[in-house]
Length: 376
Image: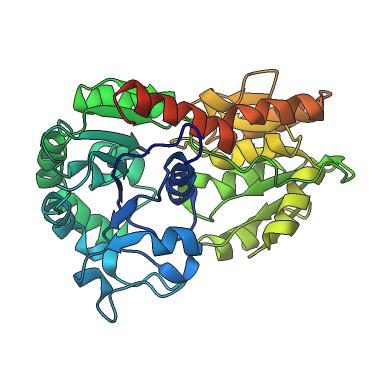
């Protein structure tokens, strides 16, 4: 047994695995806390896009979500998300009686599981269900038939979620903003433990171009790609590279000024080089946390961000970048870009700042929480 690893029989319950994004990487980052990899329960998993260790630890999925035409195959999304009304009951009926420790990794229904008497249930909450509690913000994220279905189901799901919020013994939030939501919606206190970020993935020997800015997100409305591109109109001494795919691509290509270029799918190594060579990284969507902001800092690149959400935990004004009050206004973004470009930034200090959110730091913090509440 490695010193300090947890030996009690443990399970991790995660809403779903649709790729290797922030929430999935957080679950992967938990595994090294244990002497033996915990059993993982999840409603649906796209095994083809998961690391072998994570995939092989999954012991239970919904049979409905695995039906042909429903399940996700690789990056083809499938239709399993339409089963959301069924998910609360599926998680409630999981038999977790054999486990002394249950960790739910939840942004939807996973926190609603029942544990055995005397067991410990710690919920790592990425956010309370956004489409239930943050309906106004979600209008830009979920629309059309799917949005209408969620609106019809919202009241029932909210009542269930409020009841289920009493089941975890301990709440851990990924940011101060999420901890505030947990208190507001669930009347529960949460300990803040930021998610793990692979801070060592970025080269330090790449020549930096102070006039070159980077934006890396999905091309959807709440990420504000149109406003960011418009902000660079008239900034002829500066350039912007945008990396992303999504439904706004045709509209963006039609309006972006000549000093803006748009790239589609980009390999991880090339993306790391873009981060390391940029004079600034732009992230003006409001996020629960915002891993890409930490990745920019790890590359020695300052960040322009919205003064809200997870950015307030990551970007210290004047030390790590610039925060703006009105991220929906191209003029406000433009002023922020000018401010960022007009200052000298210490790349090594930014890299050091990113280490606040490293994978080792996550395991240290989350392990401390588990042990403080009786995990052994």
